[in-house]
Image 1: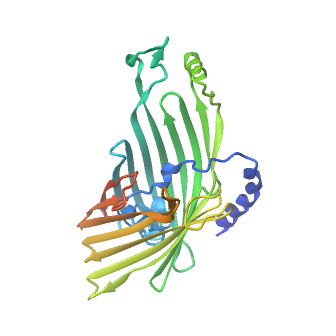
Image 2: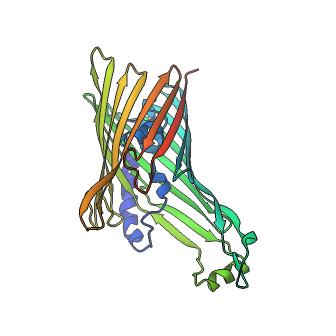
Length: 356
């Protein structure tokens, strides 16, 4: 608790200073995509119910609730007809009955992007001058979780290292921290996480040859300069409860989450220049801890059609899970039944549980 108080004091001191620094509203958005097929099937509404290795992403405090000595998970997701590839891997280790640690990584990449900077040479089109490059974002996450002296209360935190690369032209290193908590009482669970609690700093550097700079200036582009990008905190809170029915053969787990940020107005359900609240909802039906059916709804937004009529639109998701002894398979169909411009995405996760 002393650590949490010190963090809050640090934030209160730094907040005025952050107001004097330019911030990027959608910085490190690849970390907002979610991880794990189970969680994505439930609309990412899992901050209070997560209790496996993916907790290091959603609520590191919950790593204490992982039942296995070691858990390993891998996820693969392709979006926009395979153009964007989203991967996640993590491992958790129980130190004892009251503490646990975890290590994970997130990768989002778009490969084989054509570089047409030299396509036109002396007024002539030369396709042989086209080269390819990749734009890749990485996050490396280290987590710790521990029980407190308060019955039912767990606390945890993350340390994140960010690496972003755009071909040979630009790259950035970043660093950030998350803090979280989980509380359970009378079969109800409450969870919360504040991401980038001290703000996450990305230091960008650019590397252009003199020929590149000349080409950029000829095409009326501005030359970028080294800069510092700041990601402001985002808080997520949620509650859930598991209900067992018919001799405890069946389980029902509903959850409701709310994302809260103050980085400027966003197109969410509750929107203002000072405060934005984005709800998420998910539900999981289980049978004998063997097979699961899941659904969720997230990213509720106001949209207008060509006539100017306003309506609400969101991203529904569905999924299934299968647990076989010490291995679990999960599948999720993201943006199901509402493909629009984004299309649906197929997410697959495999989880291994080790107790020796």
